[in-house]
Length: 272
Image (tube, rainbow, N blue to C red; front, top):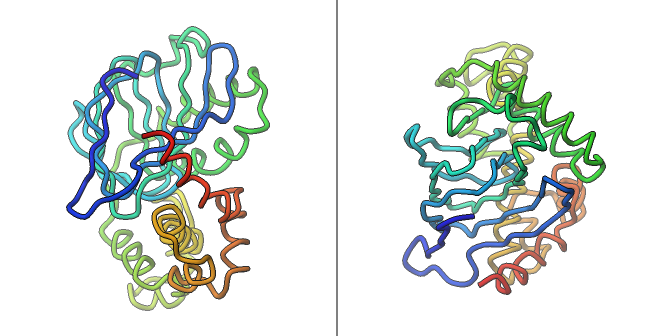
């Protein structure tokens, strides 16, 4: 990474701002989990190899030569080597999986010509957050390369579209009240529940119920990493029925327990 930097994002900010945790590496490719503190600012930087960023939790404003885009849902961003970009992290913090690879390992002709490719929502977002991310710990080098090649080919064919206004309204309602059911959301929007559920998933890359669960996990993950509140209190504040419900949801969405997420704070402190 060239020229990277992090600074506090708001008055009253405290503590660590970033965690880089290597998960796996093979010859020609490295995979790591990256967590940024809420409201941190990631100064403009570039990478020596191409990097594929897979969204996990939170949100940020991403600035590249394409302009600025808000990224706060299932998505993937591919940076070619040397492509400058900067991020402003939102109030929920931001967690991503970064796959950094030698272009010769992947196959240079497969890389898009554009310095930066953003695939927000849709089938690409769903695959990035689901099958691709879920298999990263199990793939060997050959399987990982094949999966990445297939993903980039499919994602590159996804048309760039603007999200319909109603999906943004549904998302905001779910953020405000994660316990809302699809039929309640449909009644508010004047839409059929089955149509709303499938159309929302096609547009955003996740179902309304998964989005609601993710919003709870985002709130809890930030509190686990940035406060000393006990887990039971965090579970209640984030909208879970109880601590057991929080543990089950974390495992289902992240494949990790809340205690492992809390330990990220120690690694973030060590990274300063």
